[in-house]
Image 1 (cartoon, rainbow, N blue to C red):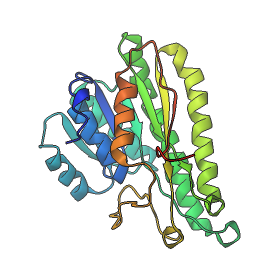
Image 2 (cartoon, rainbow, N blue to C red):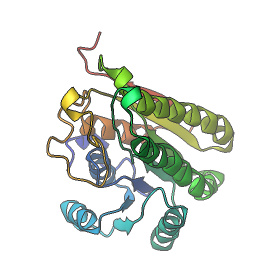
Image 3 (cartoon, helix red, strand yellow):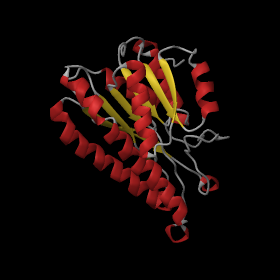
Length: 256
């Protein structure tokens, strides 16, 4: 479990759905949410990895594993149905699914761009729209309701080699702002957490953040580690309903 013991119990009674649950960041978020007392629905594409994470979390009956690909609207709908059937409601959505591929723009592979667009943006749209209704229902009852989007910001001098990924990250930030304007007056908070990333040239031609594939180096070059990201997600959801931790930029302390 996470070492953020101060958060123990602060999300008791909450029901969270985490897309990209078995990814490097998603696993940390799931651990932190369970420690904070939430029930969680872990959504991922790999049954074995979901089972392993469930065991890591102690096999709790507060944890439900659901196999779904965020790019499939039908499977996202099924994940919502599974969550409501098991826990009765959903009041926290975390979308941490994402892939990153880099190269000089002129050398870019359209198939890589399509994958990033599908997962990072289209999948996020599916998840956010599909779960908006149960979140708004929670807000209507006077309960907390939160959407947390995991974005990214580059601290790497070779960031131009990630032009498409950076463009998608900017789109996600703008989407968060638009959803905040639409859903905030209805009592649903929208947060975006943007951890810094740094990818070396040796990493540029691989999927550096695939939520469903093992990573030998566990994004060792990342500037901000998953436990810090998870702690911010829990903090945002635990704040009083009257305030919104709207946009969080997570940088290493030594960053100028």
